[in-house]
Length: 129
Image 1 (cartoon, rainbow, N blue to C red):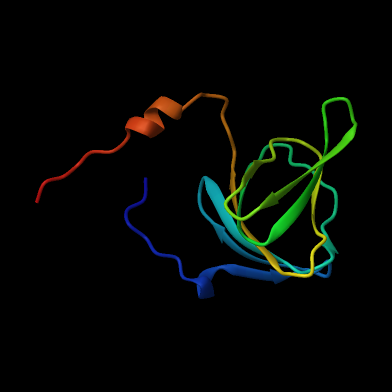
Image 2: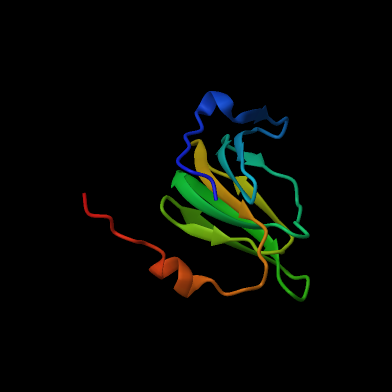
């Protein structure tokens, strides 16, 4: 495990996509975090991930999430600031159908199938100084 490290925005990989989304990618050995800004009336392409799981945290604005359920039926939901979306391996797309910019953080990782909730809840050691 790496020690304390700061990654500045200037060190991220910035991509301005033709679809109207801007992304700053922060890529690490076992995970990725990216900051997305999706312009008003912008639709991302439909896609899915074979190995990666994504969790989105909406930080500003509203987002229309479209996805295919297990039976191939298109579904949707709307999310807004402080809502979290877990994408899994679904076929999905995101749309900003508002007049305001939407911002969200994406946490991407490759799950190994083990339930680590208990370890995560208990993995803190207080140090007295």
